[in-house]
Image (cartoon, rainbow, N blue to C red):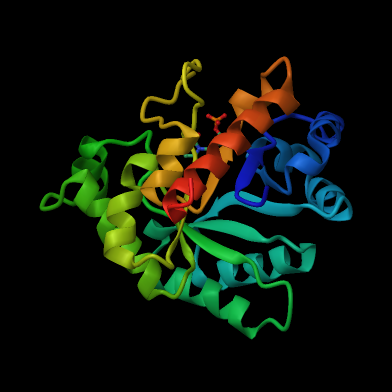
Length: 241
Ligand code: C5P
C-alpha cells in the first residue's frame, strides 16, 4: 500500500530492518526521522532503497535558502522520495529548495511544508511569531497558501485540517497526515487524532502511522487492519463501496 507511510521511529538499523522484513510486501513507504537518522544516517535510507521502498525523510529543514538548496540536492543523491521543510523558514527558502528539485534530471522528491506543529498553540503564534490578527487555523491556511505559492507539492497537517487545506489550496495539493489511530486504540500523546477512515474521507493523500504499528504485538495484523480501513474509505470516496 503506497499511501500508508510507516514511521520508523526506532533507534537502530537492526530494529528498522526487523520491522521492514515483518511488514514485507504490505508497506512500500517508510518515514525516517531524527531518531533513526541521527544514529544511523544515510545507511537507513540506503537500506530502504535497496529493499525497493520509498523514503520520506522528515528532517523539517529550516535554514538560509542556500543551505537548504544544498540539503535538498543531498537528499536527491540519496534517492529520498519525500521530504519536509518548515514553512516558517520563509518563501525564498522554500522556493530555492523547489528550484533544486526542478533542476534535477531524476529522483525528484515530493517537497512538503510543515505549517504550525500541533504541539504549538495560539499563545506561541502571538508571543513568539508575533501574529495577532489570525487564529491558529487561519495561520495554518495562510502558511499552506505560502507553501503552494513557493511551488511545493503539499503540506504535513493534522487530519482535522485536511478538508480546509484542500478547499484553500486545491485537490491536487498533497496532504500527508500523522495523528492516526485505529478505532478503540490508545491515543498515546496525540490529542488531535483521527481514524484512518476519517483521514481518508477528509481527503488525506498519505497517512503516517508510527506507534500503533511499531508497538503492536502483531504488526502485520495491525498494518493489514489499517490498510483495509484505508482501502474501504477510498472505495467509499469513489462511490463504489
Ligand atoms: O503518533 P505516531 O507514533 O503514529 O506518530 C508518527 C509520526 O508522526 C512521528 O514520527 C511524528 O514525528 C509525526 N508527527 C506527529 N504529530 C504531529 C506531526 C508529526 O506525531 N503533529
